[in-house]
Image (tube, rainbow, N blue to C red; front, side):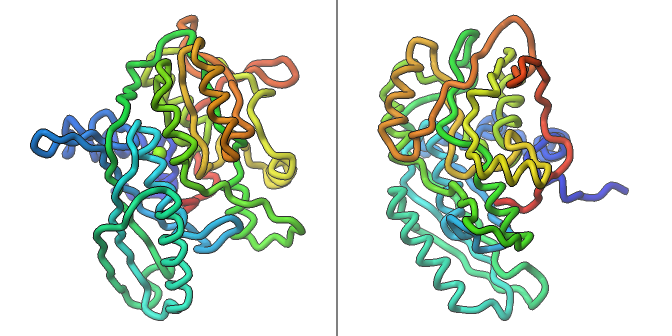
Amino acid sequence: MNYIEIGHGSGGKLMRDLIQNLFLKYLGSEELKPLEDAASVKIGSAEAAMTTDSYVIRPLFFPGGDIGKLSVCGTVNDLLVSGAVPRYLSLGVILEEGFPLESLEIVLKSISESALAAGVRVVTGDTKVVEKNKCDGLYINTTGMGEIARQLPVSNVSAGDAIIISGTVGDHGTAVAIARHGFDIQAPVKSDCSSLTDLIIPLFKIEGLRWMRDPTRGGLATVLVELSGAAGLGIEINEERVPVREDVRFIQDMLGYDPLYLANEGKAVIVTSSESAARVLESLKRHPLGKDAAVIGKTTAKFRGVRLKTKIGGERALEMLEEEMLPRIC
Ligand code: MG
């Protein structure tokens, strides 16, 4: 008998295998098969983008956000990176008997503020309660629907395209690790949890925009490995150009985490034609959330997989995350 392991939820290789071998065996619709962050769906003659996400983060409150804010931003960002303008959200909550109403109110206030900032409206919802000790306080599921503004299939990506990251990597994973382990750190690292609505929508007008993905579970490295596989191209990344905050790097050296594999909740990996890279970068940098944006590498037909040029002049291959570094990060 085989059983689910905690690593099946990591967003890495275990999870990908589970989806390929079991989920797609029974649920292989045309809309689902591309396994993008959002599906394109038709209702009558209208087309929309649809995505869903469940949130089981522990702890529920962390520096820079909480499960409520996360449940809006995560779903909104999945629509945005799929080329859609977010419009509507559903909200499903599973509450544990004994959960403080005061905490629920804080989470709902956070959902309300985040939805307003992201430009979405909560239009339907569901509430369930389970007995004490049958869940960790509160789980949330949100489904998002958006208006498709750009088609950004991975088949758009070709050799010589530029790869951009919209800001520093590893902030969310680090913030949650600190909050969970109760480290007493003077100025705690804040999660980057935020909706990318105002950062991403201006990019839809730029012609050379090819493909986007938000590097959440599994981090930047996992997105790049998936992109390389799906596009059938190699990816060359210059480690020195990948922005990492000083304090994040320090804490990660201490804990032994690799920032390239840590979750982000307010970042986008953007692939553009090399000609459009400067325009995309300029647009990103105009927004506070994109001030640290950088071109970090390019796609190539010379090899397959992802190669990282290290700071000391070496080279190493980036693989998909095998082991779960930090479960329940979102
Ligand atoms: Mg995503």
